[in-house]
Image 1 (cartoon, rainbow, N blue to C red):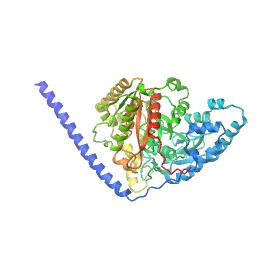
Image 2 (cartoon, rainbow, N blue to C red):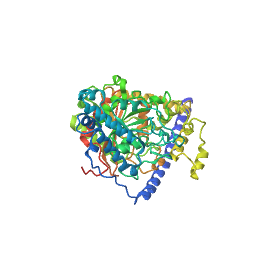
Image 3 (cartoon, rainbow, N blue to C red):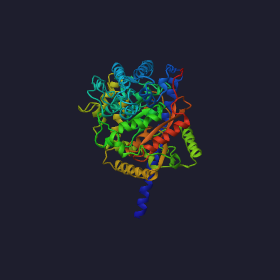
Image 4 (cartoon, rainbow, N blue to C red):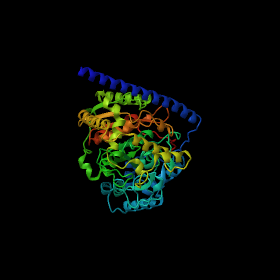
Length: 540
């Protein structure tokens, strides 16, 4: 009798779960169909603004190549900095990615670098060893402190704040000889995947200005893709390096958790969130990621195996096509499935090794796991962050103010605040279950990957979508976010353009501290598939 009652209870729970999933599937299916139709109607006749042509070959060089040419006096740092300043001035009125700059100071620093090289005080070998990026300009997103530049993180309450000193990663790049050029746009407090705020406005995708650059390192990725900077720095707590890198067709590396300093960026991540938040390199060229990573990792490079030679034929390869038929997630677009299959076929044919298709049922709950782990981390709630720690904003009041155009916050920020409030507390049975599931998933992946495995995963169900469309598919970033709470290193790799005319790509995931494997595979995929595709005509 008791067994019969237990069975009936279990069946009742299953039926309720099935019914809830059905309702969610119907709801989100209708929302996506309607939103796709609405956005198609809005943008069907809206012209894309073409970026100016790339007319100087310097804009087509990697940062590593530029550094070598500057050291060997084939070009000057002043020339390089001037070319990128001019490029920013040409493209930024279209894409709105740069929000503050130090152009004049950068030119003076470039002249100083040129004088040092020309003086002969240090030979080429010493210059390369001590200052590997001497004279090369770089950019960074507007959530890191840069001395003398605005430090807003996209929040209106911070619009007049100026950085008083350099964050750790900026200081490390300067020590390596690189020249800080400009800061780039972000979502409000970096907590959405479209780069729009009420301080600087919206950034636009260089491949299609009707579409998003992503977030939160969206301004950085858009600028890099446009040829406005040789390389840059992003940060990532829910895919904020990888998603913009994907949407803008460049390379981005999410390091192993705890390797690169996150010091002096807004919003401040507490102790637990520090293990989810990472800072890493972004570039159009894969060859820049490893040398830049060495600089950013500083003394923590000894915890990695960056000097270890990688044999691509001895790596074990796996791939995941999707996270299951979760009703809150969009289906993976055929373009992305085919791009991933091309990668699989290339690896199998070139290296004569199998690429095994995997299914991890726990990834079905990726969004729930990330949300619960973020909520349980102990940071102040997002509505308190929006108030700069002076109490909390009222979501109801702010929504009403938004409706009459009097709200200083974006609809995205209000939506994030609402989603956070809907997440159950860490003591709730569902939260406890999700935390346990996350730990189990991490263990499964670690056992699978070992020290010689990589996993290929789509970075998002679709390529870059239209502006504001993320509000109708708010959980699709689960494809990148889940790996922040797992801590694994990931390199985002561009794979050409899809049927929408915007970039495709894939995430290459390795086990903890196996960044060298993901970077090596990324370099091979760049060689095989061409890497970055210019969104501008090239006339040089």
